Length: 241
View 1 (tube, rainbow, N blue to C red):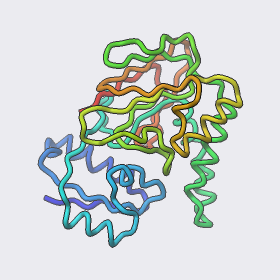
View 2 (cartoon, rainbow, N blue to C red):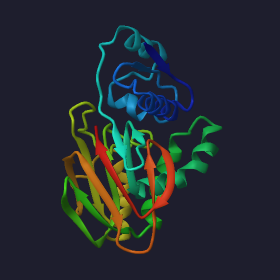
View 3 (cartoon, rainbow, N blue to C red):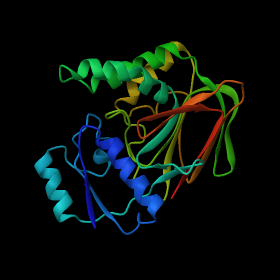
């Protein structure tokens, strides 16, 4: 059975199809093809599906088939590309009106850039405790700008959160960025677009199969799951499958 996912909201549709197959117990049996006609196309980019529709059709028709991992959260939600909290989620929320506004003149992807810069300037960070595969890697005393678990390489229309991620290798790429000074936060936001954040002070990249994030204050934090802006929570757990 071959399902082809396309349209202006391809990322949301792709996620919805995968989640539906999972609920039905058919996820391992179905073959899903993706035609990236949205504005972000992040997961398509991660698995080298070209943005040209005819070239993408060739990939869908002729393969080869490629099994991929998914990420599951503690609400049994299925995430295909990436899930993150902090500045990345805030950037998505701030980008939404800009994306719509700029989309009217064919510049929709620039909305992600505007949202990312605004998040870097406005937000002083979140106090969060982070555990990776049972080991505490951030104890909550230092403010964090972003925590992300990625199956694909990029988020927000090309911001390379995890440029070395390989969907299907059984591990997720994890990024933890501390919130330092405002200029450093802005630099992180700008560098995120190119993927060149490893050299910045306070940025760590890890690999693992499970991440737990929980606030150490009374404040909740938003979660961005494959571009879907979820309700704020006090804790969340993500697992690769």
